[in-house]
Image 1 (cartoon, rainbow, N blue to C red):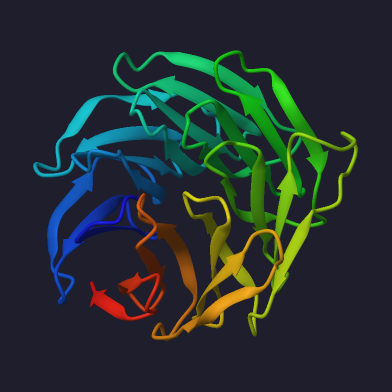
Image 2: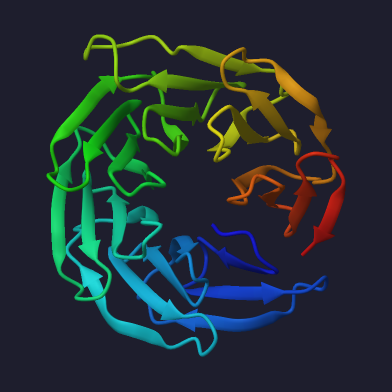
Length: 290
């Protein structure tokens, strides 16, 4: 999600999405139209549109300011949509579903570009910053990296023994960071080398007091950030696995989302404590609470 003064919340108990701004978290817009609970949401890079996925199996695009749906619902999944992402150029949308499929859509024409099959339920998707690759993770712990232009497998392997909750491709698409439901460790894999069966991670990141729930790369590819059930946010050196600086403390509940600004100066973290916090990556100072 792009870092801005606006945050978007999706609720598993509601058929709507709420866009919020400011310290009191008063909604500035809502987005209603799904026939089932909204499970995932992300912004387009320009921040004027957002995309949602729902229990109803549909994917919808919205105008941020007006709350109006843009075009038709993207319908092809036969089960719950667990994850959505948008390419940095805004041309394509990726959606992952309980139907074991990743679908790639043309954002403007609403056409279906690719259908990418998984052996298990898809729980997370991410389009690389250069838009050349798509990564997906599943409930059975399997990771797949695809060529977004051809739909070909670049790598598929059984990386974990349980559900993958979050993943992030590095900006050049060569490294993949992951975390799972039941571990206090984050992992990075080299997706360009090794055997296809089950390559070992090239680095692990340990230090959180509880399970790691989300992970994201910095643009420099030398750092990554994690959020945890312990409420902390931590920054790591990719190559050494060492923690950089102190934990960013402030959230009172699970951190379920982290992201880094393109210039690497700020980190955003979203939590079940109903706040989004913006941090200075260099000084570790809390800049804003939304």
